[in-house]
Image (cartoon, each protein chain N blue to C red):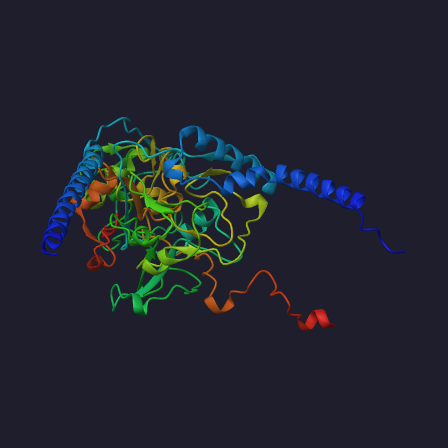
Length: 295
Length: 204
């Protein structure tokens, strides 16, 4: 039978189409809002609250758990600094595992914010001859030392300078953060970072629902999407609540120290004042707030 | 013609001045902004009082404490010797050429430790004993630089005792099994199958 293409059926179809479009757009209003969301630094507190609330709902749908999404701003009078004792690190990679869990990093494809380099004592700090794939029965291996590298939280961050979308910036407490909603995935920042500290989500990140950390920060460990860059944030969700970063808490040898660089009595300041300290790739003038020291 | 040229010159000068003024005002206001941020950063106020809490010392071996349960009935023997009947499970490698049990354990009051000057010490204060020789580590530990601290970077901190990590009889830190190495680049596979490409398995 031949279908009629008369005026009546056209009107019927067009009204159906209009209704379904309306219904669809109703479903996706939040997604549209998210798409049209302004730069995080220009949002009003009310807008931020709304965004954070919507994100919590979205994550609950996806992972079936209640999320606490925070947007806690930097504390006044705080500049975060980190110190790592190279003479003490044994290369056990406990920090890597703790970081992956705390910060909801994708398990497959694998993303790890901390890389532990194994170096030969004879060569000293020599990145070209370092090895991240070491697989010994027990560590430390004789004749080797270990050099964990993560975001150095530069005072002069080149990743921020090159970002064409202004999707990454340095907060007042010195943490370099990424707004995953604004990141366009161009990976200029990855090219600019001399420490390999930024990681790209080449695939849709996968995290088992029972391992997801539900205490998240908008600028930190909230679940990411495919096509955005992520990096260490000194566990912004923890440190802005006063807690130590996850890697500091887990380190079995106490090689990792963290604190306020502006507080003369803090642990990091004691290290800067009393220990032999070095920064990685000092010649590049990135001015890291991540110090390596010999305890 | 000439007038016209002069006018052009004047006009361009005028434009230049205006642009210069604009630029200058912009740059000076920027400078002020950056100063404001700097001042805010430098101003530091201690808001929280740092409190410190020791975690409990590690437990003794089962049935070993109090020492007086056995030692109260024994004649103290301060002669340096190898222990064969009891405590022979303890490996002692802590400057064993020059030291032995009674350099740290009190010969009379068995349930306490002793400093080099003879002062008795509770087992909970063992760090003072360690600090006699390891002065630099002791100093660093007191300010939270040697050893592990957990809790809050600006508030409550929990610290471990020397003996929580170092066995006092064999103090060298034990080797650990490392967590798995990161995936090698050549082993990384795409999670989603490439579109328009039928794999051999699918064909079967």
